[in-house]
Each structure stands twice: as C-alpha cells, then as structure tokens.
Amino acid sequence: MKRRGYAAQPQAIIMPKRAKISVIGAGGNVGASVALWSAVKELGDVVAVDITRTLEDGSTMLPVDGRMLDLAQCGPMELFDANITATDDFSQIADSDVVVVSAGIPRKPGMSRDDLIGTNVKIVKSVGENIKQHAPNAIVIVVSNPLDAMVYTMWKATGFPTNQIIGQAGCLDVARFKTFIAMETGFSVEDINALLLGGHGDDMVPLPRYTNICGIPVTQFISEDKLNEIVDRAKKGGGEIVKKMGTSGYLAPASGTVQMVEAIIKDKKRILPCASYCDGDFGLNGLFVGVPTLLGAGGVEKIVEIDLNDAEQKLLKESADHVQELVDVVKNLDPSLA
Image 1 (tube, rainbow, N blue to C red):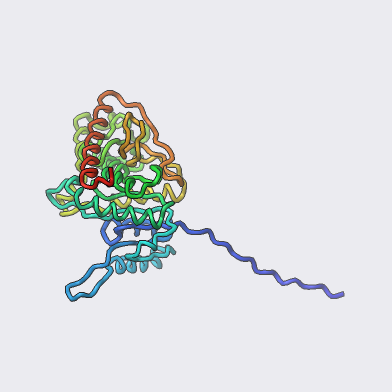
Image 2 (image 1 turned 135 degrees about the horizontal axis):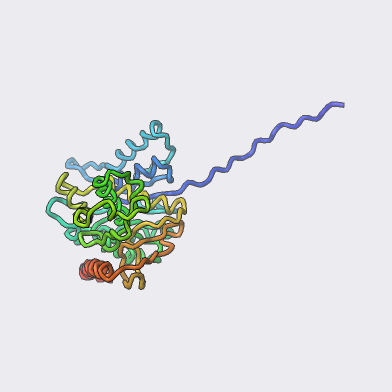
C-alpha cells in the first residue's frame, strides 16, 4: 500500500504591528535627533513633519526630506529597519501612538526660554489643532520652549485628556544634574539617582535630599557648598550651552524625549520627571509642572507624590508661580487658550 504524502502547508507569518512615532519639527536639531534615536532603538516607524521652504528663485524644497533620507541610509550600518517618512502633510501622522512636538524657534545668546513665548505659542497652537484632527488618540510629548507654557498651550489646542499631554524637561534637567555629579565624584552616571521638581528654567527645584549614588546619600561624597554649585549649574544648564555654541542644546533634549517615548511605546511603567498636569498634586492646581510621573502605554498613568520639607515646598511653590505667570501670558496672547 502506498503511503499518502502530505506536503507541509506554508503558515502565514503575522508580524506584530510597529508603533508609529511622529515628530513635528523634525527639520530642526532636536526633532531630527529624536527621529535618529527612535529609529536606531527600533521603537517604531517614524514620520518626520516639517515645513516646505520657498527659495529665492520661487522653487520649493522640504529640507526634512534630505535629513530623513540621510537617516534612512544609516539603517544598513546601524542595523535598524524602521520605515522613515518625511512630509509637510499632517494627515501622515494619522494613527500615531506618540507625537513629539519640537516645533518652534530655539534660543539664541542673550535670550531666555520665556523670550520665545510670543512666537512659539502660535506655532504650538497650530500644531495642536492638526494633532487633534489627525491623531486624536496619540500621546503627545511637547519639547518646545518655554516648556511648561507650551504644554499648557498644547492641552488647550487639542482638548485632549491630561494623561495624553506631557512635557519633556525633567528628564533633561535630571540628566544634567547627574552629569555634573559624575564629573565631580568620578563615579559612573549609571549609579547616580536624582530627582527634581518644578518648571523648566532657572527656578527648577533639584532635590539633593533625594539624590544618591548607588543608594548612598550624595552628601557623603560632595560638600554642601559644592553641591549647591552643582544645583545652580543644573538650573542654568541650558543657558550655559547657548553661550558656548550660540543656540540651544539638542542631543540631550532629544535623548530625554526618546527616554519618554520608549517608556510609553514599551509600556515600561517608568517613573520619570515630566511636566504633567497637577490637579491637587503637591498642592498645585491647573498647571503642567515637573513632577515624578509614571509613564506607560496610557501616557501619564500616575503622579507619584513624595514628602517635601518646608523649604522644598516653598521652592516648588515659587517655581509653580512662575509657570502660572507664563500661562497667564499665553492666555493674554490668545484668549481662546484661556
């Protein structure tokens, strides 16, 4: 009797759907760096959005197209397979899981973050309206300055629930604080744990009491005077870079942003310092202020409150008051955002 042969039937291979990360303002240094690290870390496909420019001869060009083609050509060497799209069409951000907003003008020497507010509030409002139309379910990470006021602007422009709107500042500020501690002590940055609160600016509130090196209080390694110097340098870290190179830093801000993107895309449940909406948290109401934030697939999943002493609470209140002043400027510039 002949045996009946059975050919193996090919099985359909179902590949998991990649996350989609859109970067608004990807023609700038911060946005381009966010696109770079998102691709290299294979966090998802990247849509890079920026404006088309008109040249003197009347022709047009989309500079972000060249930047993203350059990035795509890194794939064979850095071994990533992310699909990278460059466009000036906001409809391309549809179905994004995360949208990063770095659009706006950067600081120049002699400028504070607050000096940018008049121009950037218009840009961020317009971007927010497009995100509302095309990517209503996305988690939005704002990087534009002045950060805390621009997060508020984005919230009002989109009308999104507050868990979908976050500002990147604290990850950068903490990284600067850790860097300066590592420079002083000679210990690895990987073993330094730190925390800060408040607005993104010179009145942010680093917390030496919550800072340690591999669990050992930082005060066992650094004198109080030197630690105060490091705290002050961290507060003014952005301005120091502007003075040294003529414009805002972009590598560290982008790295801090991608740290947040990864926590959301991978649902990592990380506690990161982010500008999140406070509704009674830390005694603050109605403001996006830097606080320890649990980040996961739902965006802001929880604000983690910690005990503050009177001096720390006073500094946080002063920082929040400055954020409120900037929000009031936004409302005066555009009453529709009130």
